Length: 500
Image (cartoon, rainbow, N blue to C red; front, side, top):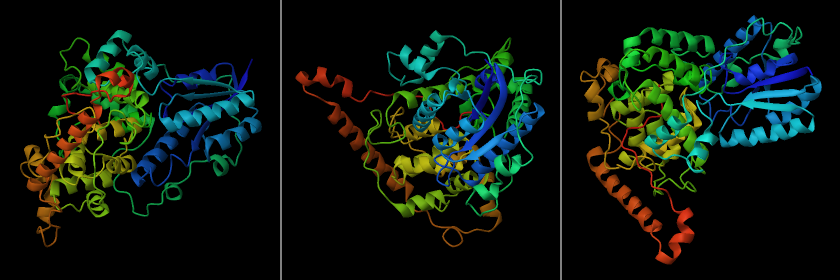
């Protein structure tokens, strides 16, 4: 039987290592590559101007690659459960393929679309390729629970063996008997909307340091892989948070949007390591990809993973609600040049080093401002090019010492930490060059760090004590409440939102 098939692009915005797309081409007569601008995901709360620009770049690159295969990308707007039934009828579709997505909203959305597809007699095929491993299998191997330490995750993945090899991108020969029907008014009906139409942010975007798209992702990967010695020696803690040019690969945005397959990245690294002495997980580049797997597994196995309330691994903390302090942090007006420089870079470029993320996250939460980590999570999700749902939530849990990392007494100084790797203040020297005077041209610090961080350590100590108290049960209740107790989560290694 031949099919009229829709391949639904979501995160996997690439042709290489796209097994769901390869599945779409099997027994296919007419192929319709579709991307849906779902208003639940693509809106001003989730997408700042840099993320919008990166996405538009990804879509143009994907459309260009499809044209080389004598196909086109169809971009639609609306809720997928509303869009697809119309397409099924209009194009006489008999098969739908997509890359599996583990986010709670995505699972709910895909369930609705699958149900509608079945009603219309459409076969649904999905493939796992956004992560190195099947997260359900990982959890199954851990007795039905998410692994809560990196070491445990490593042990499970070792038992599963290496990740699957990536599949090749489709070629013109693969498309020989397949056509994509489109009309002369394709751009008008299904074209990629311009940035100005998508983004409500009226500010002109800065220099695009990290253009979106598969071609750019693979070019950057090739450039890094040429530096065999650097790749082999790479150790994440040895990189600089305030280097004026990135001291890491900055491939994380490309992996987040699926322009670069994690499996392709893994196996290219494996080839570079072969025959050479190299660093090992957790600090190596392979180790960074395994951190990504760790957080994905946690996000699948832990309820309410991106929230404090109802999250069984999250310490319940009496965070303050202070819109003024939150706005000062978000808008780079804290009066601490290092913190403000990081938040300025975040807004302008859409990327900051992982240790810089550590510094501003600690400052917002347990270090200085005592504001709920969920507020920081929202800002990062909107502004970071690599604002991945699972990694973002997991790292804010970690950096606020709410889960995974429990050494809450280790607080980053908003002054001394930046000086360690930037003794001359190059990262913040615009202030110096402009003759900016703190307290006159530049705001005074909004808190006294030396005083407030000590008070906050005591507040965190009380939150931990309360958690221990709540977990204590009488002997006759221990058995029945065993499943309800919050699991102990410990890990001594530093975490990060961006590890690549």
